[in-house]
Length: 102
Image (cartoon, rainbow, N blue to C red; front, side, top):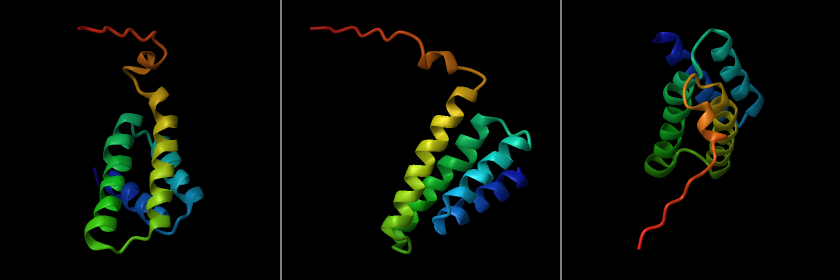
């Protein structure tokens, strides 16, 4: 679990510096270290978003550009990780069934 905290801290630091390249590199390194994509999303990416939101809205020590970069990178990383999930990846390519009721 300590390596998750290390990756999470590095990812957050990169986002604070608005360094997209480094933020993506941290995620690549987490994948290369054998951490499952699901764990990266739920233990690194989402907590980073939550921390950034708290720092922006509650503490006011994050700029709008930092918040934007965090959101943009999180969206792109999520799009990249979802197809790598061990379960549910086929759900995104399945036909959509919509049922309306009166």
